[in-house]
Length: 77
Picture 1: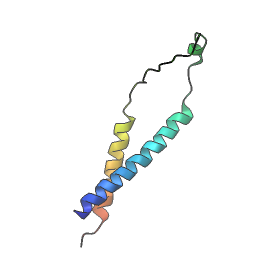
Picture 2: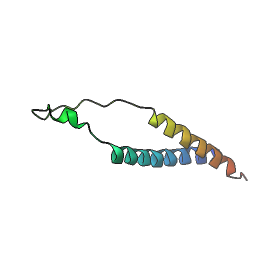
Picture 3: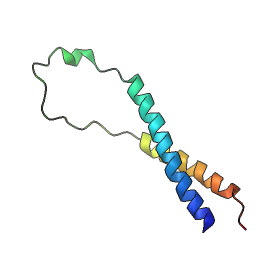
Picture 4: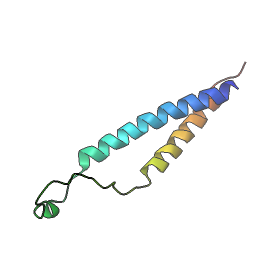
C-alpha cells in the first residue's frame, strides 16, 4: 500500500512539473503568423479552442515511468 501511495503522489507531482515545463517551452517558442494579422478588422469576442496535440499523453507516460521507478526504489518494511 505504501508503494501505491508513493507512486500516485510522485505521478501527480511529476506530471504537474512536466506539464509546467512543457507549457513554458511552448509559450516561449510560439510565434503567431503575421500573415493572418493583416486581414483582421476587429477583435473577436469569442475565441475558438486550439488544436490538441499528443504532448500531454507523452508527458503523462514519462511521469508514470519515473513514478514507477521511484516507487520501486522505496523499500517496504
